[in-house]
Length: 366
Length: 250
Image 1 (cartoon, each protein chain N blue to C red):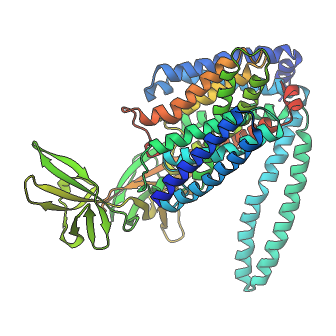
Image 2 (tube, each protein chain N blue to C red):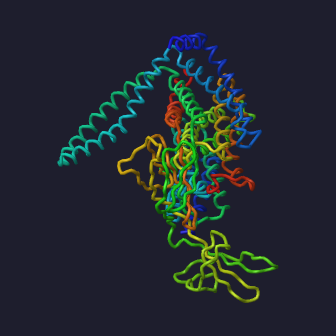
Image 3 (tube, each protein chain N blue to C red):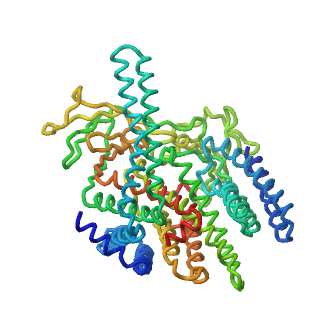
């Protein structure tokens, strides 16, 4: 703490020279980052020592920049951010404790009790959020503090990124329906996909008509479905005459109809676009695992965009194959996740305050 | 519905062209009427696209180009009505260019929302990027238009537009990362579109860090930044060799 306060004192003493110096240092760092992103485009480059070094340099410049921008108000900045953070926590807190209130009401058998509890909780949490938010905004009213906060959130984001870079664990697994997967490594559970479903947009199948010419199939047109028929111009073919396509025809072709003649033609029906993947899974702790579930296992429904989390692990459904046999899952442990979320949300919010602030405030900040 | 989409796109393009012509002939009042007509047609176009796609119509480039003039409306309100900057003409011109671009592209009426796109982040992510790109297009037009001018009025307008655009771009970048975390299990995949959007953000960040220089000296970065926007939005989508996680945006 003593070291931190002396560091802040040194960084903020030589203003505005320090800020100009920092800006002139920050610009080349940013340009070097851009150059590195431009020159090499292989993903491995981004994990190279140079990129990691530039990331650390950016973090340091941002932190010193935040100290310089906050001038003598650095602790006021921290207090303001803390108050605003607590105010922002009011809503999740309301949801969390509201759930508890409903649970207790169910135990007692009187739902009105739960509703009264929810109303009281909502009132109290809104009051707390209002008071803390007001105090937080008051604390942040010194010139340059929002810009300093932006820099601090970038530091927070980078801390999360580096934590994940060194500590995150990712295991992609392909699971057969009905079979169990025991991910290698330190996973304390096994995953079993009980069943899964691929929902498509009904009636959205597309058709294509091909003609055999000069030894290859050439595209002629896209017939449209019209009731029980498929039409292209004056020609039409009944849907019932289409046959199931062999697997060798490719994953997108579902059914086909060979039209004899000279030259021969082929009508193909392509699968409708996928609307949703749903997988019903079970997690079971392994023998040496410290995990324990109430019924010996945990069951859950997985959807794309809706990973489930438990005990620090996240389980994602990435995709599934059209044949209905294999599901791609991802198991992940991400210790830097809270830092990245706080950093990203804070950076976005502070940039709006910075962008839409009155000009005088921005000039003072600069 | 496809016919309605073509009609509304053409009608709004004509209205914005008329607005642009009116502003060039210094008839601001008529120009404003044409702008309002153009935006009315754009709202109808947006609704038609939404009905055809059965989802918020932000799934491909044509959808985005059709929405682009609507995203310019807040920019017009902030910069022209509130700050009295002479940006009516560039705003109408940018709307015309985007609508002509939309007319030149295939209709893609069969587009449906893929599972990964069915997220609460979908609309805010795309809308924030479209708003920021609209503002940056105006900023670019002002920066280029200021060549040979002695007064700094246009350059200040360019600076103001870029300053309004930057928060939206930051939000787009951050929301994209958080969405990718939920959908794909990683914040950042070094995908070509992600890399170029980061480069664009860094160029504008550098622009704002060079606050000691004259606006005139920083103009080059504004132009470079918009070149990066074009690469991110257009070139990356159509580059034949680029395999991208954002390929559904083509």
